[in-house]
Image (cartoon, rainbow, N blue to C red; front, side):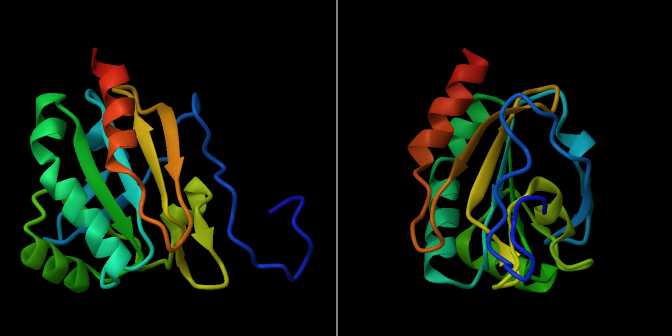
Length: 166
């Protein structure tokens, strides 16, 4: 990445900014179905990158998203979680936590979609904790992020989606 000293594999700053188009992708979900960025067009979408599904902070964030599913549905928004975990791990987490939305596996090529969005931690080998709120045309309306140890606030998602739908 330009501007970063050679040999300094730090977390990437988001390459995708508000107003920009979300990069195209095609990934397998927890049910082995392919989900593409273009499948999300026509309604608001929330792309939630998380480091690893089987960690307490990530599971807590997934539980918060599940609890707010009625709000996402009311706004016609599609929620998608993305992680470098294998789809079998994502399926296990989805079943245990009652996740009714797609969890996409960015397993192989390892982290390619996180890299395209500019939210891949090269030192740890997984996505950083960033989310992208997309409008119906696939443009990024808002980027929401937090540190690796800190969950994102679901209220921020609601505010961003509300602004797109009201």
